[in-house]
Image 1: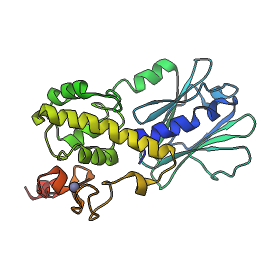
Image 2 (image 1 turned 135 degrees about the vertical axis):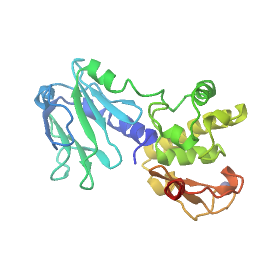
Image 3 (image 1 turned 90 degrees about the vertical axis):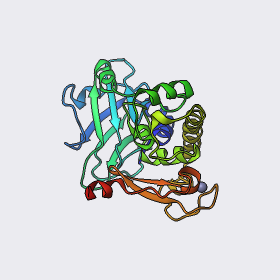
Length: 275
Ligand SMILES: [Zn+2]
């Protein structure tokens, strides 16, 4: 489930290698993965990439000549790997770039659903594609967060995951951030006091920075997540078993002692069905 820390770690790792040699062959691409047909993939061939940029959870690979951009969104199951020359890759990747000299960049996606996407765009079209995104989560700051929280009343877990409001956070990091901020996933953004907004802004930065540092070291989910997917395990702060609640289409993990004053949150999907 790549979010800002995972995608930024990937960006840092790929920035140099993808710009080392011009693209020799672009494709093949799975029909569901490639979202654009004009310009064609072949238009990339012979061009060199200028490196990798990131916006929210998306990666941008601009060409050095400034004419084209490859935009890539891993969604939940996409995986992107750089293969050194001669290194064995997957038989049928969702997308592949082969560089002169033999290195490859390959996108794979487990499962039958192909949701990850690749777009080949002009720089202007690439900008339009991300124009709806909110400000970057890392470095957002308490002042900006206070404006966001005051603008509309939202449940915090849902607000943090909304890419139009804040870009880069998904369900895993929303769980980690809210736990560090000692705030309920169901708390309403509009109701937050100044000190709570300050705690949330700090938690966004410290948690995403912690995640980025660990991911850059190659740490897996078990080491990175302390609350997410830890149902029944003791909270690392207070020892209370981590609880889980279903909310919208998501499963939320939280500590009842640290975050909700001991209250167990009710399943919102179930209560909606019973109405
Ligand atoms: Zn706790």
